[in-house]
Length: 173
Ligand code: RP5
Image 1 (cartoon, rainbow, N blue to C red):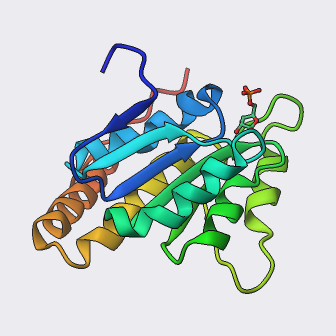
Image 2 (tube, rainbow, N blue to C red):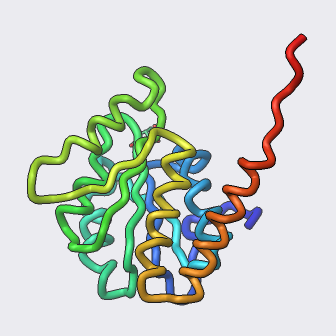
């Protein structure tokens, strides 16, 4: 998709990818890429916790009824988005800490991971790896009830292992 858009979506999205700003896209597109690689229907859009709080609550309250099964939420700084979404839905919420300008995303990580008891947010690594792994975790959840997707996930693991086995080291000079 090359054109600018407010929403990436398919007819029946199963994973909702939301982020606090379009500036999070460079990180969060790594989650979207994984979902596309696995053929998982998704939607992606900006939902800012502090600039769009009403839309954030509406998103969380309506997601289950719209067929969303997992929410992946990325945000940076005082990253309230994953926790507040999780507070308003019983769907699993995957939190991705986006690197921030001054504290390199350690603020985002701590904001997301330190949820008080009672509202879980599955929290991933800061940045691209976290975004990709959040999507892989979403795939693993969906694959519990989708044998074709389970096979794709197992094939992915085998292929990844084979790439590592074939890795070569440069000569010592
Ligand atoms: C957060 O503030 C966003 O998730 C983003 O990581 C950060 C900066 O947002 P912008 O100022 O780039 O819109 O809400």
